[in-house]
Amino acid sequence: MDPIATSNPGFAKGTQYRDYVDGVQAKAAEKKRARLNREGKTPGEIEQAMYVCSLSDFPRIERPRDGHAWGPWVYVKSNLTLIYAPADQHWSYEVDLERCNTSAQCLDWIFQVSNKHSRSAESVGHLIEALQDLLNPQANICSFGRDSQWSAAKYLLEGSPDRPLYTKHIDELFQNGQITVRTEPF
Image (tube, rainbow, N blue to C red; front, top):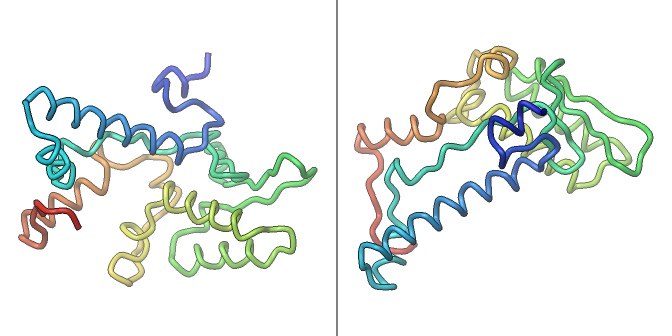
């Protein structure tokens, strides 16, 4: 049996990663609405509460695993690549994730792919989503517009801390008083 499918049934090999993330987030929102209903909140109070987030509202989202896809791009963990393999073609193209250690290197791959004659804007968009989901570049590579020293291979092989990066970052922002909870819709 596939170890990916058994570790998390909603995260099966070959799944479009963003579909998985959307499903997890929708289930978390549904759970929160049900809890608020059980607490006897009015529809207006429920709507307002849906705009207020606590860290417990953020669902645990598994990082992409071997075989997950973004459109025609598939992650291959064994050699740390993204492979462009559209079903209607008899060729493929690889992006070496071990060579995505700086923002310039990531941009180089994006522009290399966008300059290929057979790549659509949609497939380039899927590549950008894959890089975002796999490498979390804004946090790891170019946070606040500055290049960071890091190893994409180490990040992909060893993983990140137990808590997702974004919740760790949100914790820091709350502690520093840089963000507060908004109680009204945007």
